[in-house]
Image (cartoon, rainbow, N blue to C red):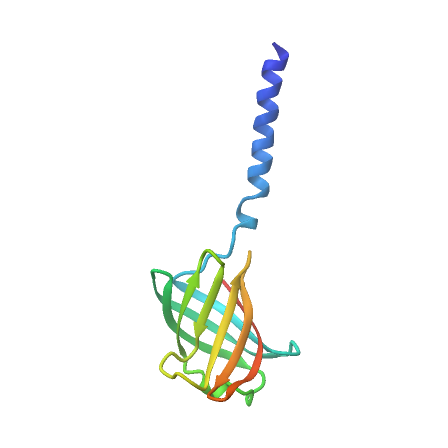
Amino acid sequence: MRKNILLPAVYFILIIITGCSSGYENAPFSFGVGQYQFSMLDSAGNKLADGTLNVKNYSNNQFSGSYKFKNIYKANFSGLSAMSGEFSGEINKTDKKVFINTNPKIADSNVFWNLIVKNNSLSGDWTFSQFNGISNRGRIKITK
């Protein structure tokens, strides 16, 4: 009789412990309509700029909105002048990848953000691409 009571109690405790350890803290970063913070770094890890990203439209893994800089730490970094304040992008939920075009009205001379969905953020690389190829690059991180 004791085994019949003890075994379900042990299973119940294991389920509770497993549920708590894989809960909210390990949930992947949720990206959708809303406001986010971003930081841009150069390839050496020096902070170039930070600001806010406001996702206004999100449908079928496509999104768009606006961004503005709060601080620009290096005013003449290559690519800054190409950033318009509006963006478009897409998310691949299966691969956990996000692509953002920081100036969707221009095909060349543009800054692109290629990010990966992490547990607490989106992080990855930014590239300044011109007609003749990539002329600058660095790191980017987006948090809620």
